[in-house]
Image (cartoon, one colour):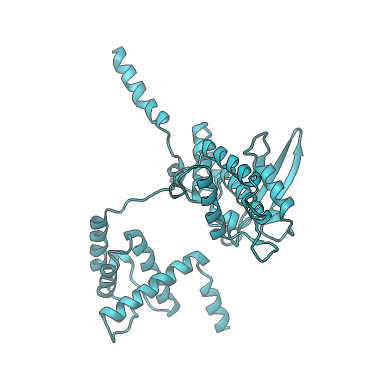
Length: 328
């Protein structure tokens, strides 16, 4: 019974959170070994945490340090030790505030990928396939990443939905013929907001006569890389042959290759640029924000941060203001 309890307590956080907490706790232990040699690491005190924060001042942002702090708290939970809230660590809070002011860290948000950029990428995918310089395996991988990118854009999906252990499976997409179009009905059963299996998230993706048709790209990929219903939707062709679920590293690395081939700056974009780009397109076409939240599975007003406002849109308000002033 005790082993089962330990196992279940170890499952309380998502895998990505566990990795962050592990890095944070290891950093804390190394600092304690250097600053307070011979002193027990746990339980942590305000003095110990403040010294650790100071040690991290040049290598981490304040938000990263805060996440690492929770990792130390998680280690206390493993040992069933009490752990103070950050607000109760007065020294540590003052150090963290000083780090924020000294570093002046700004949040760098990924630039949204729009229709224009996607068209340039579509042409790059076609060009790479016809130049005769790529192997069949590389062409198949281009198509896999391209299909995943289009679905992430139209579905406003998080990266984990297309290349994670809780991502789309073949059985999660159902194709339906409706008049002259094919509609892909998508059902996500796992993800950032569905970690406990208490609900699902679904949305439709219709086909369209365009290079940017996500349904066509998906069907092309499925034909090129067959898989069973329980298998990941997006399959990667490794050098040793066969197929394997497309990893986050494979997706992001090849996406950067396609961005560069399209004449874009890969450093300006991330996998999250697709989710942000899809939301931006919906906002620009005056889709009701509640519908955007439902389609992209947002649970808070953070959805507004995904709207990358164009210069033309930003001009509308002051233009109307100066026009009214001119009529006065």
